[in-house]
Image 1: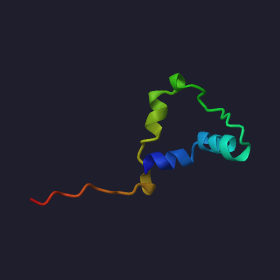
Image 2: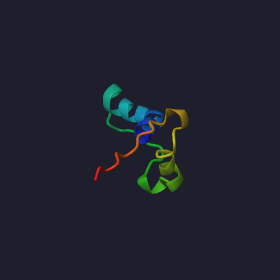
Image 3: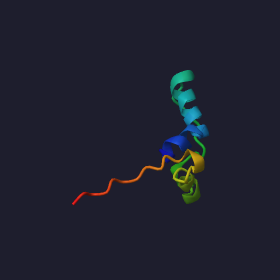
Image 4: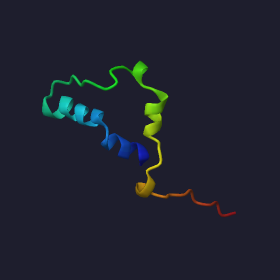
Length: 64
């Protein structure tokens, strides 16, 4: 859920839709442009807690 919410706020989602659906040029201009430019900090933002938007799901307890 966290990753989905982060993707919705990402400029790359809009860029991907533009390249595939709107302009149909299939030439997205990602930011960053290459996988090597992606930082650990950038990845961490996709997994960061969402505060009030957090679902609060918990794993079920096993019943033994």
